[in-house]
Amino acid sequence: MDGFDEDEFKKFFPSGFGKQTKDADVKTQIDRTKRTAAVETPGTKAIEKPASPSQQAAGDEDAAGSDSDSDSDSDESDADEFPVSHNLVFKTHERAVTTITLDTAGSRMITGSTDCTVKFHDFASLTPSTLRAFKSVEPTARKNATSSSEIHPVHVAKFNPISPSQVLVISATPQAKILSRDGDTLAEFVKGDMYLRDMKNTKGHISEITCGTWSPSNYNLCVTAGTDSTLRIWDVNDPRSQKEVIVHRSRAAGSAGRSRMTAVAWALPAQGGPNALVASALDGSLVMWGGDGPYTRPSAEVKDAHTKGTWTSGLDISPDGRLVVTKGGDDMIKLWDTRKFKQPITTVSHISGSKFYPTSNIQFSPSGANIVTGSESGHLHILNPATLKPELVTLVTPDSPLISVYWHEKLNQIFTGSANAETHLLYNPSLSHNGAMVIMSKAPKRRHVDDDPNFTTDISLGFSGEGIVSGSGISQATTFAGRHPTVGLTASGRSRDPRRPHIPAKTPFAKSQPDEKHIKDSIPLSSMRDEDPREALLKYAEAAEKEPIFTHAWKHTQPKTIYAELSDDEEETKRPGPEKKRIKRDY
Image (cartoon, rainbow, N blue to C red; front, side, top):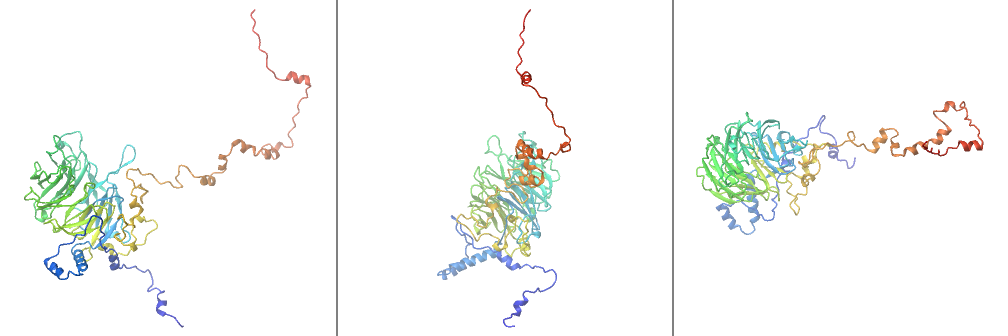
């Protein structure tokens, strides 16, 4: 046969019989998540890593026309050193992501948001096309007297570093909760008596809790800090009363002596450093106690660590327990030495955006060789802990503040939460393990008809969402729910506005007012309800006279009525007329 191509013809036949398995092209899927060049935003400049003397000498020799090559080499070296070359985006929240935590093994991620929910993500069940949470919990949801749901934003969610089956969840309430890794409530700490003046005599916090963390040595202990100027150490086995109460006496607060506690950190002595408990307050002070007590008086205190009245949102202790880094609302980052806790070692300027997001944090890397934090412009900053100078600055969310950061030790991946409700997972295929690599090793699932498109990702458009940026800096691929976080309903049928109570959806089988078509089809003679009753009866008068229904049996046997014949005179006398009134007479 002329023009017959046997190879093309064989492509129409299957290669085998039975169920065909779809293998994942891991390399192609990973390449699709590779980050593009950073998009510069107005008012920011690209910050590069300082070149070594040998690189400077080579740059002087090849100064003519070699700038682009040096830039690409520096970008590649940074990408090889830090896990930021690739990006996965989770769009499971509806508002700003305020906290991120992972268990020790790195198999489960929990995120909290100002949409008053905590989302649970399991990497083992995720695929490149279904980046969604398997469970959503409202930690403070309860019914009040008006039968409406009372919920609050989530400030902190932290896995227990020793026992990963417990999660500390802190919302904008006086009561913290302990949840299981599956979202079940294990314990709820008691609320104190707000009418007592001495905070040592109350059984719990009397006002909003702002932050908290776990003990690094005892898996049963955790500490919470609140706006009642106290730190309280709890035993999860006895949530009805705290174990220790630490009252911060603020001299700057006047006669009341109270100041809001803004951040707290507990050192990890397993790394070889001293056990210390460090907290910051709204009066600008930085206080340190011994991690094992006694807590009657602080071991060291800095009164003017940051500007008074500014919110110090970020606080962390190095793995060796010798350095403390703080990020304040005065747009300053300061490095402190626990052995000389009077003056900061280094101070740099940094616009963090903690004025609007009080949970904006700062964190040491797992090895302690770097410090990672976010900025108001959406950049991720990796700093040198000795000088606080940036080693890498990369744009993650254009024109959207980067609030929370988390660098996992075993996964070697950086997780970021932004004000645009996105959770970014930054990784490097050559440096990272599990986590994103487990997700990318699976074949993408086909979108089901019942899947919510807000919780799925179209793999053909990529993952980072950095390629298409409009004039205002907002991605054109943003979903309707991202642009309007309080409009419409979620996949579970609840209103996107957390202040609005849940209203069940009306279906054709549960309508309080059935439609007209349903009435006509189901109820006989239902159209008569809109007619005039008199007209409805008279339209059958002629037919009833010709063919009577009820008197049809007497149609031929019924006698005719015979009336008496009266004369004209008799008719006049019989006519009814007005009766004459009788006249009363007195005799």
